[in-house]
Length: 159
Length: 285
Ligand SMILES: Cc1cc2nc3c(=O)[nH]c(=O)nc-3n(C[C@H](O)[C@H](O)[C@H](O)COP(=O)(O)OP(=O)(O)OC[C@H]3O[C@@H](n4cnc5c(N)ncnc54)[C@H](O)[C@@H]3O)c2cc1C
Ligand code: FES
Ligand code: FES
Image (cartoon, rainbow over all chains, first blue to last red; front, side, top):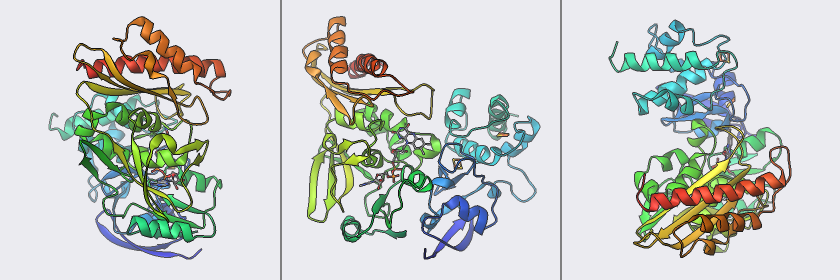
């Protein structure tokens, strides 16, 4: 299969890569660009471990073709911390122990950030529905919801 | 596999029609990429339609709405006016997948994929929506109800693409609703579903109704809605509607639902969706 040259922006940086037309964006990020934060749990849109945003929309990068990244703005988990300073969601996930093996964590953080950008004070039910496409086999979800809510409270300036 | 982005609907259609091998449209890719990954299909050409001007826009049209074929369902959900006119269409579209899937999936892709359980389709059929189709022999308009041909099949000819979905103008005191039954609360395929669209007179009598059922036949089916026209949805009318719904079911029997279960569930969902649509049409929240 003939490779195609793609120019895109990832976490604010211009990036060029070559990929085959059938290659998922997830494989491009992980295998060609060394951005291994997004994980492949299923490759078919069910688990959310590969979550990124494309032009501000939360998507599964396993269900986007690499070639579709042409001219797009992509944000991944690697762009979440500012240097050594963690994003409040990242800090609260650590403080609340909202992860065990951590495979689901990058996807959940990217998805939760996208929720809080749209809705700064979601109810627990809204958080659960928003994250319904992010599967976690370890935590039982309660700590994830608590961590999202305490990060949201901090981001609203309440603590 | 080759990949191209089409600049116009005509260019997309020409390329799809000219491909001697297997050619596929790419909209949100939430069906197509899963099928690629599973090795179910090996297309020679994939034509991305998302760059076609206007195909990602929602515009008012003849009192109703034109929904571009590549509008993602998450974008549809954020459109307050379409939601106010067609709450049932929007709720059906928004049941598809997760937040991540919503960010990509389209109603037109849901329709063209041809699943009998497609969640956006019963609402569109109950709405009597149509589609604009651009193909090698020009542009035509068809009813959404006439697109599905059976599991995984549509009536679209080679090279034809859907460019827009048209939702008609709404009469006063009209509303719709969609319900599906799934074994979980999220992320599952409908075992049975029902969409109901109603218009009421000033005294609350149903003057117009369409009832469409999903997942209970090889393709979406209409139930006889005359059972509730002229009524105020009293118990007898609702019972007659449920019976009318059951009588058009011709479902499969599988581990997710037996024939009996799918049939009776379709009846229950039709009556419940009718009540929701009725209350919405009366302005009851
Ligand atoms: C995790 C997950 C959960 C899901 N849950 C549901 C669910 O609950 N309910 C449900 O109904 N579906 C569900 N789906 C299936 C899928 O998301 C929907 O069918 C979706 O609406 C498809 O839209 P799309 O734009 O992504 O289609 P695509 O994958 O881009 O296309 C689907 C098919 O239609 C063709 N096509 C697309 N657009 C056009 C067009 N404009 N003209 C002609 N042909 C076209 C394509 O060639 C392809 O064959 C789910 C999928 C995933 C991955
Ligand atoms: S790897 Fe993309 S959703 Fe599971
Ligand atoms: S922490 Fe292991 S899957 Fe979530």
